[in-house]
Figure 1 (cartoon, rainbow, N blue to C red):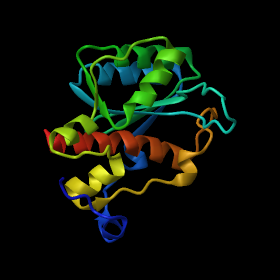
Figure 2 (tube, rainbow, N blue to C red; figure 1 turned 60 degrees about the vertical axis):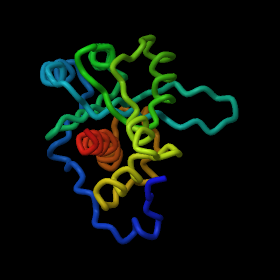
Figure 3 (cartoon, one colour; figure 1 turned 90 degrees about the horizontal axis):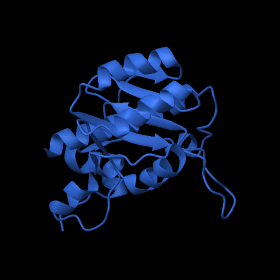
Figure 4 (cartoon, helix red, strand yellow; figure 1 turned 30 degrees about the horizontal axis):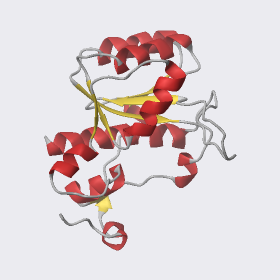
Length: 193
């Protein structure tokens, strides 16, 4: 099996150069959704991920995704789904046969998308399939992939992970977290192909 750096190894790596706030577009209204669609519909590959308000009660079913993010090479778009036009644009992008959407651990995202948005995403690639083809037995996440490919450390805030993604106003740390999940996935995909 190929080498996977340990947590100790990773702690000594240089930081992964994350996408900065100035290169992130928060999409929460019709006008910004339509502008984002005009840009994204013409791209061949997008980094992709979703965020949902966590559930804390046994048997509780998530109402997410509440946020869907798409990363292009220089800009990442973070869509909030409480606006109907934002939701419609996300559905168009997820069902576009012309855009490959790449990310990590996407089976859970797919379940939530089918249940909440009522669509079947197409042209979606879980990057773990590319790692499996290279001999990696266990699934790896985006943090490990960044460490394996770039010898860099991707910081992911535990607080942001478990925050309320259904809030109409997201914090800056939530926006950065969401954008960088999709952005790092795109960078990993580009390095593998």
